[in-house]
Length: 118
Image 1 (cartoon, helix red, strand yellow):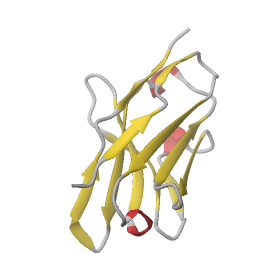
Image 2 (tube, one colour; image 1 turned 180 degrees about the vertical axis):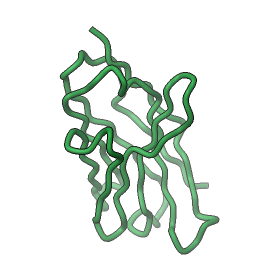
Image 3 (cartoon, one colour; image 1 turned 90 degrees about the horizontal axis):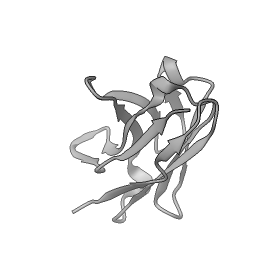
């Protein structure tokens, strides 16, 4: 019922920047904790960044000080600004929405490919 659609993926050179967007359907966006995950070939899916309904953020160590997560509740959209891109950032990036106190409210997008290459 709730759909998440990622966009903005593509090819970027090392050191370059890219912004991902995730549009969320429905009327409960402002209640969700939003997160970005990524999965590289041969690796498990890993958490990249989260932003709570109240706006607090946290980041995984490999992307700390390079990536920024933000949200616009008026547009039902969460963003991931990725700066100083590294080859190791190559992965499929997934958007996730959940309500912490309601575990059944957990939704995933289909992912968007990000490739860092020279």
